Structure formats: C-alpha cells, structure tokens
Length: 192
Image (cartoon, rainbow, N blue to C red; front, side, top):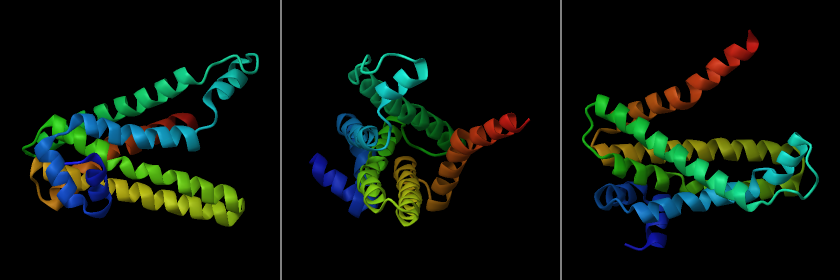
C-alpha cells in the first residue's frame, strides 16, 4: 500500500480506499495526508499570519518569525481532526456502530486530502480578479466542502460497518453539533 496510490484512490475510488484505511489504520500516512492540505491552506488561503499579528498588536514590521505560526496552524488543524474523530466516534457508538477511534481518525485525515485543491481555486480567483472569479471560487469551495462531507460519510460507513443512511446521519449530527450549532449560538449572542 503506497501513500500516493492510496491518495489517488481517495480521489478516484473512495469506497475502496476507506475500506482499506479502516482495515489497516495507517496513522503515519493519515497524518501526512492531513498535513499536506493543511500546509496548502496555510500557504494559499491564510493571510500572512506574522504580519497580521504585527498589525493587530501594533508591533514593528518584520518583528515576528513565520515558522512558529506555521507550526501553530498545522497543530491546530491536526487537533481539530483529533477532536472531530472523537466526537464522530461517540456519535457512531450511540448509533450502535462497530468501529474504532483510530480508524475514524485515519479516515478523516484522508478525507481532508481534497483541500489541496483550494490552491487552484485561489489561483483562479486571483487571475480573474473579478466578481466572476469570486463566484467561481465560492462555488468551487462549496463543491469541495460537499465532496469532503461525502468522503467523511464514506469513511464513517466503512469504519463502523453501517449503512449509507446511518453513516450520513452520523455525519450530519457531528457537523451540526460541532460546526452549525456553535455558529448559530455565536450569531444569536452577537445579535443580542
């Protein structure tokens, strides 16, 4: 099982890839597969974090080093996946799924791999530099996030040996409680 072959399978034949991931649980490769898109997001999508911190805190220009910020972002991305895997695992157990936390963590790491495609989307947005470019960027981002949710559902299905409907329900509950509900609470709190 080669890493490049497995990443290709995640993109081209996800069901076979996640079946293999749930059986083998290749944690080292999974972390590598998650760090690559995280690095792409750091380089392409985020503003220059040291400069942003300098502006926010009124520091002298070029006073902060970028290396700690990169390490921080990569660490936060991995910690987020670890927490998400734990939450999905608890929800799956409540739905009577039979699988492991490690298998879910590996599955979510591999499911995040399509985030590397944000680089071409950002390039397209920059090259077009028009409302059309931004529209294509946001439409592409919505498609990409939907694809990742589908990959998450496939990973849940294979790791917990559930039906597609039950895996989708587990994924929906996890996304709702971890992302949508907190955003709603913050929005309500800000409005009052």
